[in-house]
Amino acid sequence: MIEFADVHVRLGSRDVLRGITACLPERRVGVVGANGSGKSTLARLINGLALPTSGSVTVLGLDTRRHAAKIRRGVGFLFTDPDAQIVMPTVAEDVAFSLRRKRLPREEVERRVAEVLARYGLAGHADHPAHHLSGGQKQLLALCSVMVLEPDVLVMDEPTTLLDLRHSRQVADLLREMPQQVVVVSHDLPLLAGFDRVLVLDEGRVVADGTPDEAIAHYRKIMS
Amino acid sequence: MTGLTGAYVPGTSPLHRLPAGAKLGGLAAACTVLVLLGSPAALAGAAAAVAGLYALARVGVAAAWAQVRPVRWFAVALFALQWFTVGVEGAAVTTLRVVLAVALAGLVTITTRTSDMLATLERCLAPARFVGLDPFRVSLLLSLTIRSVPVLTGLAARVREAQRARGVERSLRAFAVPLVVGALRHADALGEALSARGLDD
Ligand SMILES: Nc1ncnc2c1ncn2[C@@H]1O[C@H](COP(=O)(O)OP(=O)(O)O)[C@@H](O)[C@H]1O
Ligand SMILES: [Mg+2]
Image (cartoon, rainbow over all chains, first blue to last red):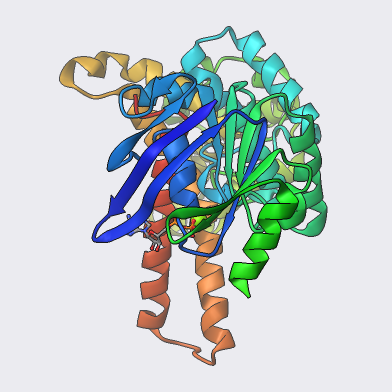
């Protein structure tokens, strides 16, 4: 459950979000909107990477302003550019890096890493340098490094923007299987088909909110 | 595969399974022995031993050559210079010492994951906590540096391509400005991704 209560965000001299109020209990939530409409800022509010200038954001029953560290443990975040998220030189090491603060025994770490790599089709690449992967495989690796922590909520900021059609479809398929609540910011409209709810942002406000069909129709109208 | 990032060759040999600390300790000891060995015969024996260790690691000839390849011209120059100053025997001894030390260091890199190496470093640095140095931060900094080499190389290649596409062949400023901007943007994104992965608490 994610709750925005009259959230305003001001960055520099710009009002990026102007009064967002929404309660999101749905399992699959999409966010669409023009470039600069505030989508990334909205996404970053969910795990406390961005904080509201006024108003409040509550995730997993906690206020992001007071419990940012705890919330980040429960909210996984996938960015657009996988290169910026991969911090270790090889595939398995990067996934294992996510687990280091859990202080698990080595065998347990190896087991979990192998399991998540197998689930996302990277089992054969465990010891490969991350920079030898294709863009799509890098994004899958970034996803593995998030999912190995079994977050309660997953936020994705344009996860398929840099991917080819095949990898985009793969991400869409994987998304369908995830047990977590997922919030996806995307211009990839087919990715949002079948979602429970889609919000349309325009200049920092929610201008439509409903089923994917309704919201996307509204989005197309304001974009034309 | 070049440099630090692609150096690890996966395997299950006894050398792969040896803890990183033991390998680094062994490397230090072996280099000391190399310095103490004085005769060409003794160094030939050492060379055989190093070759034996490579065979034990089962990493293949190509990976072994990749370790000493970067110093091949240096070795040739060293040998030539020493030949003139201390004679052929001394030249052989000095050159073999250097090449064997490089080969041994390479063997450690080939058989050890970066993360294991860094974990060992972190343990060795643990006493530095008392002077306010956080070993985890040092090792994180090193892994980020290693990881950023291919990212920045890729960025540099893209910038060059973009310049060429616009007909600019040689301009330091047209290359440096977007590269620096890109590097800063990457650093920003990396910092944010580290926070998202729970590393700032
Ligand atoms: N740190 C910042 N300082 C000032 N303005 C910012 C900052 N970050 C984002 N913005 C501005 O806020 C607006 C919304 O940004 P963002 O949330 O990234 O939108 P979107 O993801 O929909 O493209 C953009 O116009 C952007 O330029
Ligand atoms: Mg954005």
